Image (cartoon, rainbow, N blue to C red; front, top):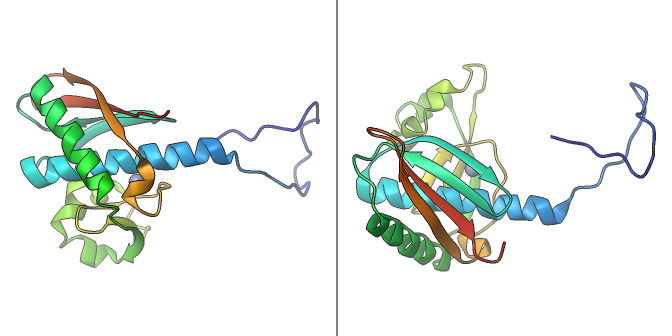
Length: 173
Ligand SMILES: [Zn+2]
């Protein structure tokens, strides 16, 4: 996270009170992009039942890697259609808190490797795209999937056995 100083302001001394301003355009684009990746995760989980192995994101574009056996342009086209269907459904995105004990019994949360989160974090913050995707998550998201806007799958790649990549972008970004 970068905090940029206004103009030529000098670096403040430790303990100096500060006022900060959020770069909303950038933040909102990240919220939309990140939520689009959740939707992708959700449609792959619903139809293929495989977990995410990695991911990355910049404002307006991102990628996820899945434990899939095969990848194809057809699968990419299917994913784009399914993601946009779920975006158009305007599913609510809810922030929830779940105890570690309950999380251990929730297959959707185990999938996102909640066990990697330090045991001292209890309860876990959970992002629930109602009816689609549920993950232990510390990120920022929009309030409903419709806010994501149109999503384009920009590429599919095989990164090796059981590791297939889907790239997406927001069409207006
Ligand atoms: Zn998230």
